[in-house]
Image 1: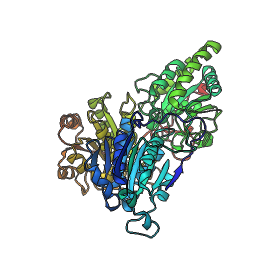
Image 2: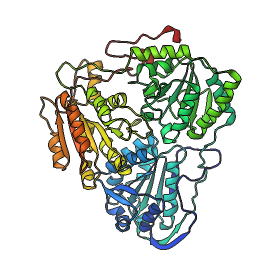
Image 3: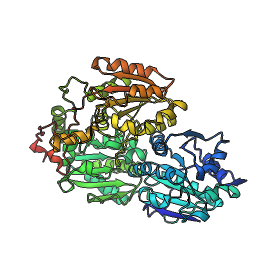
Image 4: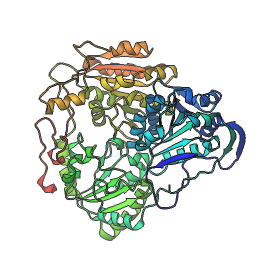
Length: 612
């Protein structure tokens, strides 16, 4: 018996499964339910899982011990397993996998599941559950994890029969990786794990009603092309769906053909290279002035895998008041959810963007190529007048923006992967790092999960072991999950960590400065200059047998980065002592129109009246 729950994906024929079921050969072998779990993962070509054993999942850990195909990474906390699976998935484009036991083990995954759900990350979480006969009795470590995770997963299963396991695992991978990607939970009772059965592969998947629309409506695409060919102030609003849908190449082709300016959201950094002349940067609350202004003053927004979230739109009824909207998304629930779409298009973005390029060529032949010179003149004026930058702090400490800009310069933009925690450092990293390729940037967007950084970096490095993977983290975020440094050290996952140590919960402190009369209620973490220095991050890293470096002088930043880059035999932690007074600018205060963006404290940009 399997209890299921779906997030809506409806209509149109089902695409071929995105996971390889090896249908060219048939397997039937004696097994237990636990062994069927591991054999299913092997047949799905899973190479690494992140997990922590416990009583209800212990039967599955026994055959895992014998697997030569699936590498298990023993984490120090189940939340770390979940975020590691996320980091792996974003870095590789494959489904990330984590395993936990019942009760608190499973509930410790909830934050990571929510994070993956908000950011559309393909992930499968396998949890143990008490025996079927004990469900509902408040047995030891019993928790209704299917019920608990329904709001934060794309789909949830409860499996009580061993023979169902291969089909449910295959379905979980299919659901996680098709349509709008997301996390799927498979909760398997201990009795199902110990039950004897036949392992049969490939299984028959049974997902009635789950048929994500992939091919867009041709008439809608044609109308979108007409609007793009005739607009005077168009903008391509590129969201994280571009990367999740592997559509960067097609979106770049659309950029080239349309010559429209592009804005890339926090989760879309790298979808269009930062070096591309049409890329205006990140929009939203802490976006670049040209990016924010372009959306506000546009007459057409072509939203590509983006969801018009509040951090981009600001006050919704004041967002882009003169713009028509073309909204392309694989998830029909997102279209017109926040902003009404004039041309709604449900479909796979990779396919839709390619079709849109083809139709735009025909539209140019019919209507001519639009003259966007006046639009670009205004936007380039904003780029020249309001570049991203910073003011040096007056307390003599290093500016975090300087540290991150030097990381960008010394490490370089090509083969590195950058991960962040959540807070000021996250925004500065998005501003001052340079992204030239998709999947170079991994960050928690919709959920804004502090503690995401260390385990997500671990997962990214496990998935891409030949790439340099840097974490830029805050002293607050880092303390939430730094125990996974032990996991990294013992498993040869040699990540590099730059702690932007401003001794505070920096983003909260910035709001206290701006909106609460500098009343710093419980935001000083006592980790930096002139404080108790608890913990000492260098001693902490040393305790985990990691390399440790502390930098207090701006003149030594480059040398420290080069030293960290040269260390390859263990993780590296660099503690950069920075000023608590540095703030993130530009900024749109919460609840107001994006027209009220501040370039710096007390400085509001002057927008060209000709843009209106």
